[in-house]
Image (cartoon, rainbow over all chains, first blue to last red; front, side, top):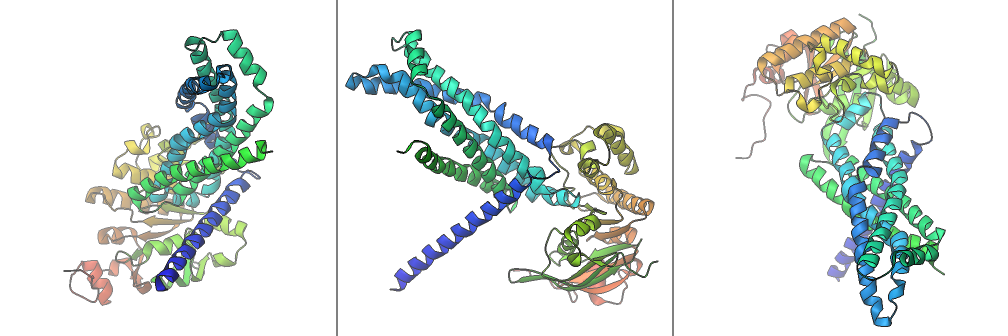
Length: 261
Length: 257
């Protein structure tokens, strides 16, 4: 009986802790977003974060999308050949990339690259008193550090996903025409005819949501880090893990909202 | 000297969980004077200063600057009062991602008190006051030695012309000559600004150089205040033991053997 009570108590503590954390992150997000409503706006920090996400992440996201499109075309072909449906490769590639893989893969790469960087940078500022120094210099650390990063990542990730979509489809096209005997015109026609605006738009909306989560968790984990180098390391890991989980969970919810019948 | 002290702390209390750090700190810092707060590690010196600067919320007590109770002020007025303070952090806390000139003029730029193109010249001017040349302006904090970082941090603390400046362990980690240089700079800039200074230090030589008055904090309370010159022969056994660095005395360290 005691063991059962201990287990229930542990479960209760876990649930309370989770609720507390979710509440704290929600308040943190609300404070950060309120910074968008009134000045000062730290345009330089916004521009720096935007460039970091939209421009300097292009190679890693582009390559990932390209190889994903290539692998997808190959997998679809070998799988569909069992049902004599090889002709659907282009359709599968474009739908998978624009609706799912483009946004999710780009967001996961950004979580590893940008979310981790935000956590490490802000975490280091926290443990070296730089955040306190901002306050003593009459600058709100939330508005200076967090609001611009969240705004920039939320706006930049859809642009990055648009590029990822194009390169992912291009990867499928390369394999389709170079290895699988599709004609270039036939592959492109199949791609364009099958694609609907909603497929792309839904992916871009997902990207904005994923971008928000990546930046939010990166900033939150960094801002609340404690305990020197070890704390910053833990914050960085936590940022990547939590934002990856949020990306995958919210992807399901958004897919349900957009496409469930 | 004005009757209203520049800074007055009344019964300031702060605990972290079960650990009581400030247990009713009472302190007055006269306008235009330099007060040194002494105390062992963990005695609550830094927490006191962080409470004054609004970085930590105290559990109780009153903080008055120019006779105005900070807790009773509307948010904007409180921010305006704190806007006239400066702080030199123990490790400098310079912003790694900004060059020296932007660090020095950070507050002026953030508040748009000077245009960006004039900020570099202003930074060079303030850096000269702490003995650094204009060639330092374009360096990054990581490229500076410990002494230079302290001087840049001092320049940043005074650039906006505060009238109440806090120095947290300004000479920690510096060699004795550089420590004396920093102390001299602190005395100079505080006099030039006509500011009130509050310094936290373990360094007795530094305390005597920069302080007009000294206060000793022990177990979360101020146990002695007096002239900084009296350190070492204050008549208070706690202060005298601390000032002389003696092992035997009323202050005991919990050492596990």
